[in-house]
Length: 120
Image 1 (cartoon, rainbow, N blue to C red):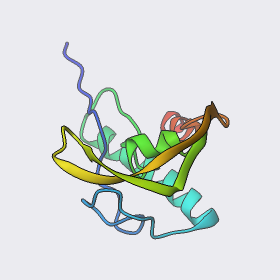
Image 2 (spheres, rainbow, N blue to C red):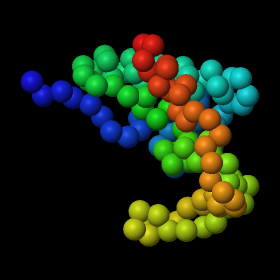
Image 3 (cartoon, rainbow, N blue to C red):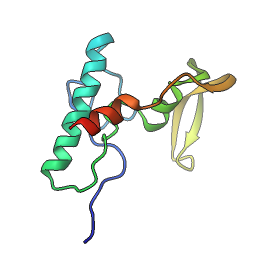
């Protein structure tokens, strides 16, 4: 038997962020954003289950970008001080956060997404 899965992100709901826009800003803030990210994760899991996907993931619903979601949980990264650099073999230019100190993990990374995906 061949199991099916997806890799990468699914479009975010329009109430959470602008769909199909790279690094789209969140439309919610504070507790509403935390709940919205969790709800979008649950919806992404359900969408995959309904489509018959065998191994489902979180669809990266709680992250603005797969790299930034990880970096936001590290000390030594300054999101207020950005640098423009080429990404994807210089096909795009992007504003990226700057390393300003020793890199240390602040705590668990992506645990909310994993818990939400496992619970549903």
